[in-house]
Length: 288
Ligand SMILES: Cc1cc2nc3c(=O)[nH]c(=O)nc-3n(C[C@H](O)[C@H](O)[C@H](O)COP(=O)(O)OP(=O)(O)OC[C@H]3O[C@@H](n4cnc5c(N)ncnc54)[C@H](O)[C@@H]3O)c2cc1C
Image (cartoon, rainbow, N blue to C red; front, top):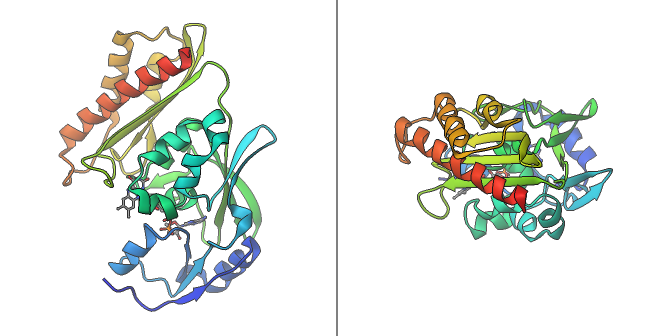
């Protein structure tokens, strides 16, 4: 349970991080809150020779609104997301998700950027980001690029983040009137990852579902979007019968791994149930 030897760097700007990543290549790892990386280092699943601690970089912390988007610095902690009045007003799904992550100690240090960049199928922000149609800002040796959350998660612990890049910011469109969300997460106990979780963001036009995104956590190699289930509901007046059809469609696309939280069949059924609940919650919130 003791990590291998490493050299510790503590830069104060993003430019310095990019320079260090360029200098040390795949021997370097960014350290944010450390709640995923340090356990992996203690188990020797990760043995970086250089740790680049980004906790002193002010430019990647905090939450503000600019140019019609809510912008969240990658180094913003879960507790800061929970406490944000701006997020409560503009994008309440994010604090709702953060509130159910791990335990108070983890939420005090764990960051939204680390949760996304880690690419863990059990992490909760990836599915939320896809449901919100968020964009990630990545900075590397060739400058800055913006990538949509949809398409960023490529597989287990595998994202579109390239070697030499740091995630600096998460951009989220604020909710408009008629938007509702649902986030339902089944977990065995406080501090555990999801057995299955479902996130729904929908927009009503009158009584009709003008748009909807349904995303799932920990029932596949990575968080993913249930497009076919969305198609059942988009353009319709949502009824219990349609919710059931969407839930059945979710079951058809789940590929959970059997583990201590349950077998494939149980997790698949739980993903469907979390989805039924999230659609109902989103609908109720959208109606106000
Ligand atoms: C007991 C326990 C329970 C947990 N339960 C949950 C849960 O239910 N839901 C959930 O979502 N998470 C859960 N987590 C994970 C937790 O939220 C972590 O904090 C999170 O996964 C990683 O964030 P971090 O800031 O700690 O990143 P770190 O552990 O420091 O880094 C994680 C990875 O991301 C990379 N990285 C970090 N920041 C950046 C960046 N800005 N740019 C590029 N790469 C970066 C690192 O190099 C590393 O590879 C749990 C953790 C623990 C210990």
